[in-house]
Image 1 (spheres, each protein chain N blue to C red):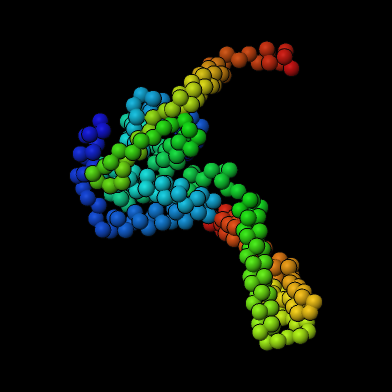
Image 2 (cartoon, rainbow over the protein chains, first blue to last red):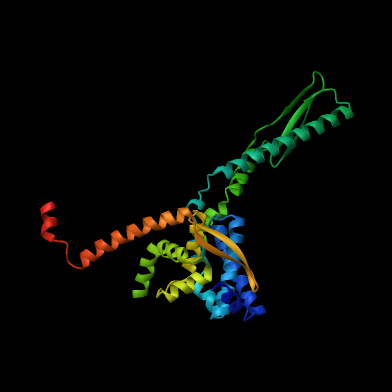
Length: 187
Length: 119
């Protein structure tokens, strides 16, 4: 059975138009799958399988267009593939990791700025406490601090409103907020 | 409308049907669709079968192997794993039970008087 199918399948090579049609369809499925929280590897696997099945079907009996029509609308097909467990909510470990990572990056940059500022102040011969601020608005953050040469003391604003905003944005990105939103708008 | 009902009913037993077909002979996606059609289930859509195969694989009920194809991407051949055989056994038992119960109802063998007495 298998060998005869191999032979049959090679009867017709898909035209450029058919390949394009298939590609566009698969991209639309891929997009819908991504909205439903399916990871890149799984999507790639699904696309590869669908591509092979479309080609097999088109080689046997139908045109590519008919085959794609029978597969249904990309959104409906993506729904069939979607694992309810994968359709996670926004609050998940990825959102937390992104929020923590953004906090760590902000702290690292803040310390870097403070160290740099301190070097600059020493080089300029500062003899009293000096302060700096790189902020979106006054008091908003994210980077502000001070340095006093005698006695040596450095201060950094570790948490500011800007920190919180950036962490929330990072959490939204990490939690793939567009996927959650896509369940409503992607239909 | 009748085809709609058939599609909905089949969805409930699709795993059973697929596992039974694959237990008889390993197959790849399109071939499985063809086998379903030849079996009389010609209204079954590819868009239902391929995701169902994907779910069976994800849940470990089928094992797969890739076979190179001269005309495109390698084909993925499916066959039931041990877990798939176990599931098939359970699904067939449930199916027999369900069909038996439905047949009894259809044949009018459920005595309303007995139900009323129980109540």
